Amino acid sequence: MALDFQNTQIAFASKRSNDLRQSALLFRLMASPKLVALSQQLTRFAFWLHLPVNGLFKSTVFKQFCGGESVTSSIPAARVLWQQGIGAILDYSVEGQESETAFEASANTIMETIQLAAVEEGVPLSVFKMTGLASADLLCKISSQEALNAKETQQWQAVKERVNRITQLAEDLDVPLMVDAEESWIQDAIDQLVHEAMKAHNQNKVIIMNTIQCYRMGRVEYLKQALEQATQDGIHYGVKLVRGAYMEKERKRAKSMGYPSPIQPDKAGSDKEFNDCTQVMLDAIGTAMEPGKAALVIASHNESSNAMGVQSLEDRGWKPGQAPVWFAQLYGMSDHLSFNLAAAHHPVVKYLPFGPVKKVMPYLFRRAEENTSIKGQTGRELQLIQQELRRRSIDKS
Image 1 (cartoon, rainbow, N blue to C red):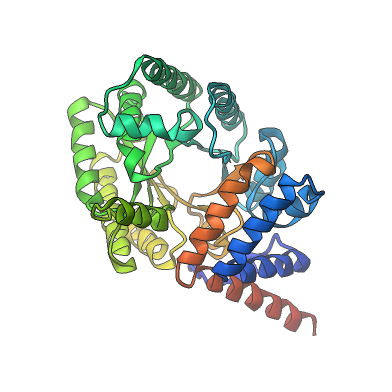
Image 2 (tube, helix red, strand yellow; image 1 turned 135 degrees about the vertical axis):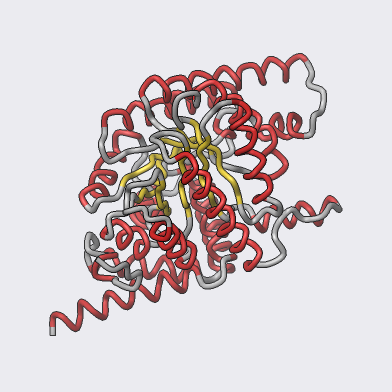
C-alpha cells in the first residue's frame, strides 16, 4: 500500500474518541511554555504536600506517554502496539538518581527489560540511559579527563561492572541493546563505555548500539570515524539516530560558561545532519548487507526524515523489512508516522517509558519542555487528532 502520513484513520485506529479528546487537551497545554512551566510547579508542589494527585497525573499525562509503572505492568501496552504491527522498547525513565543503591536497582530493572525482550515477540530491542547507572558528575569528570579520587575510582569501576552485566545479558539472550545519548559534557564517557561494550559483544553481529544526536555539529564526521574504527576493530556497528532532547539546556550551559554552543544554529542544520547521517549509515548497511553486520534505528518525529528514509530504502532496492533498519517514535506521539509506517510493513518501534509515577515526572516534564521548543510539533499533533475526530463525526452523520 502507498505510504500516506496523513491517514489518520490508520494512525488512530486503536484509540477511542474520548482518548483522542483527552490527548487533544494535553497537546493544547503543551503548546504553551507558560502553562507547561506552571503545571510543573503545581505538580511538584502537590506531591511535596502529599496531596492525592497521583491518580489524576496517572490518568492523564502518564497515560498518554508511559506504558506502566513496572516492566510487568507495561506488557499490556506493548501487546496492544504489537497487535498493530508495532514493536515496543521498554525505557526505564527514572531520572536524577545519585545513590549507588539506586544505580544497582536501575541496573536490575534494565536487565528485566532485556529478559522480557528475549521472550516477548513484540519487544524486539532494549535500551538504557547511562545516567541510570552512574552519576552525571562522575561521567562529566571522565569526559573531561579529570583525575579521579579513590572514591570516584571505585564508583567508576562499579559503573563498568554494571554495564558489563547488562551488555553480557543482552548478548547471551540475543537482544539488541541501545544506549541513549545524553548531554554533550558527559557524552564522551558514554561513548567510551559503549565502544568498549561493542568490542566485547559485537564480534559476530550487532548487539550493542550507540546513539548519535544530530542537533550537535560534526555528527556526520563522527559517524564516519565510528564506522572506520569499527572496521579496524573487526566489530559490527549499530546506531540510533536522533535529533536530540537537550537543546535548550545545551545552549544555556554554553552561554553561561562562555564556550561555543555544540548545537546546530538552526533547524535546517539539524535536519541536514540527520538526513546525511542516515545516508552514511544506509551506505554502510548496503556495503555489508549480511544479517547482523550493521543496523540502524531512524528515531524521528519529522515527516520528511521518515519519508526520506523510506525512499532511500526503495532507491537501494530494499523491500520493507529486508534491511536491518527500524523506524522509531515515542509512545503517545507521532502516531501518524508509526502506524502508517507499520501499515506499509516497515519495522517500527515505539519507545515505551515506564517507572513509578512520581519518579518519571522529571522525564515527562523534560519531554513537555522539549515539545514546546520544537516549532510546530504540538500543533501538528493537535491538528491530526482534530482531523480524525472530524472524520469520525462525519462518518457517524
